[in-house]
Length: 256
View (spheres, rainbow, N blue to C red):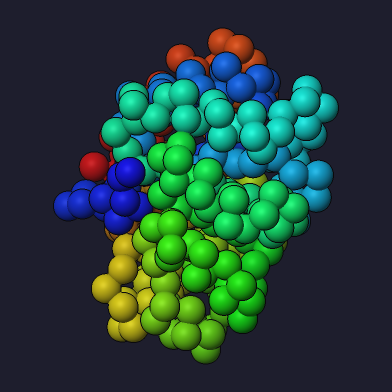
């Protein structure tokens, strides 16, 4: 299993997100491989959920399509495991507490290890409640990735001091989605994290253009892009892997 931290080895990391099962799991498999070929350093695989509170309309719609088509957590595990030997970069799941609890925390983390997933991001897991998951994650060598937002302020120090893998910096208030402008002081947030712990920081929520990626990567160790990729998938469906490859390559080139 490739550790999350390896995505940041001596380079600025490009992290791409895909909603599993949209438009179908076979296409998701090809999208993951296309992102890797295009230069992605880490891939977030979103497990569709009926109430994704951190997501904007683009990823909400993708989750709805995937669920409507019969996508399940077990099917996603099987899909990821089927390409485990082809994957040369870290994979993480992005999901919600309800899914993990319903599946069974220990069983879920064991399946992550089995299929080669080395990290998990759970936006609706408050820092104060992560102790419910962290021991099981550690036992299964899974990084429980922490998020910090512009509103975290004094809590940033506490969150950063125990962070694993990388720190996910939420660039903007609200939910995921493409934004024309990002005005948050990312540099100060990164500096505050690194005063507490030597850990990579990646910025997400709203980044969609090579120019934005280049700007954000000046102050962070990586950039995360979700909605812009999910938009491409929504537009091109089963033909989307080649378009995702081109997009990821342009974004990775911008931050080199």
